[in-house]
Amino acid sequence: MKAHRLGELREFLMSRRARISPAEAGLPDGGARRRTPGLRREEVAVLAGVGVSWYQWLEQGRDITVSPQVLDSVARVLKLTSAERRHLYALAGLNPPPLDVDPVHGDMCGGLRRLIDAWMPYPAHIMDVYWNTVLYNDAAGVVLGMRPGLVQNCLIAFFTDSLYRSRTPQWEKLAPQVVAQFRAACSERPGDEGFMAVIEEAKAASAEFAELWERRDVAPGGQVTKEMEHPLAGTLHVESTQLRIPARPDLAIVLHTPVPETGTAEKLRWLTSPEGRRGAFYPVAG
Image 1 (tube, one colour):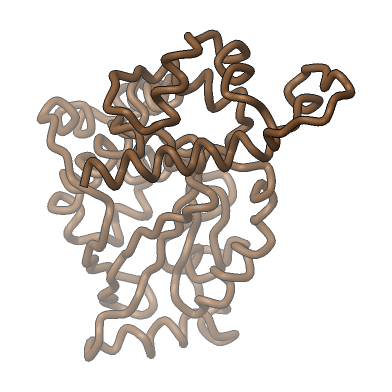
Image 2 (cartoon, rainbow, N blue to C red):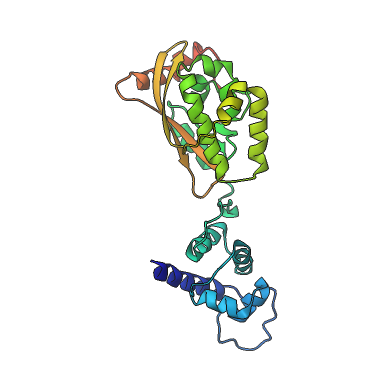
């Protein structure tokens, strides 16, 4: 397996080097005809600030010691995308860094809005890595109480929104799972100041959160079954599923699906109908 990985590393580096011209790397081409497409190994080494022999061994797929700093320098010279940089780390035998958003995929919100709107009449919302709400559909407003003026961080809202808590009979059972999942999200970006800010705000807003946070439980985001009490429709049983978006690692989609044979699907269709909206306890948030 190691031989295969190192062989893939060799082929990958050669292919990435071949696509970078001297001009793109900031080097003069000298006007001479080059036998090597793209950059030479020696040029990559100099631009990356590493030894020529060391880079040659790396590209030959030899079993040598590498560091994240050196790989980042090579990735910079070869103009690797975030996904390609992670691939380089994996082939070199290091833990890959978190994905960054490629500018090519920066504007996906229009398509994601259509996705969660198409999930109607079931609740759906989209949040960023810190669990700040980015988008939500009408059903999320009717069922989950998402609305303008609410704290737009899902973790903090879970502990501070009295409307959501009043509709969630199993709140005490869910709370440890929510906190454990947020700690798992934090572990993907250790030292990230954005997470630290959310944690400090949540501690200040909720003693319950502070107590649960000190347990240091960790759980992956996945699927959680929720029971909710709606003032108009009664008991709702839904499965909350968190989905990651590879092209947008800064976003996650949370879909709520009715549990079969509970009558929830019919109740959600009624709640989001014109008749149900007229009697909603809170106006539909858009």
